[in-house]
Image: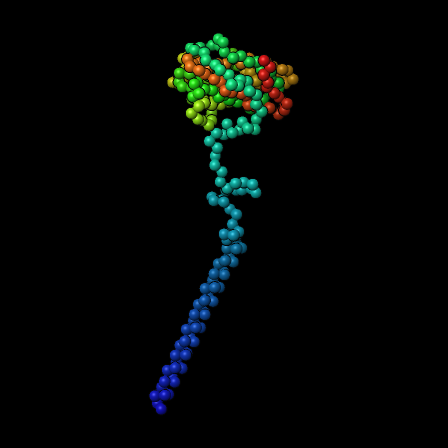
Length: 246
């Protein structure tokens, strides 16, 4: 009799302990859930949740079209040519003048110039024996008597390959060697075609002319693939132009 009573009390105590465990567990779950909900609400209203954050790394200011990450161009001036007007002065011309410091049987072109300009580049492509120019070769260009053997180390950056030399110069600062022999170890002179020739006309309605003389100084087979001017008009003369007349 006493044993049965004792067993019943132990079962009752076990049920009470089990009930207490369930209540503690439920209380803990509720406490954690309330805490997580509170954290989420704080993040949501301060705009720091992952679904609402619009800020790029380092918190740079951005507009609706601003990319977060942009790779800088390796050829900024070369790439900018696409947005400019252009005139081809020489294309696909054979040229091999040995040991020359002046034009003797080279290529001569005449330009007509109208208006004033805000930007102007000289771009050239040349090769010798279907390879880039070596230190024994040079591309010679003069405009109205200004210029000489273009100094290649000071060219603006252009794409390169194993067939062609590409040169790009700001026309306000064209480096050149005035005499033969060409060498990258020499110190170049600087000429300013932009101001001295193309923007020398203060009367925008008056036409100008300019003479271009060019050749490749080499003992091998030289070819001028392209000599071109790329330009933008000044605000005062939006209809400016440069063209080859003969």
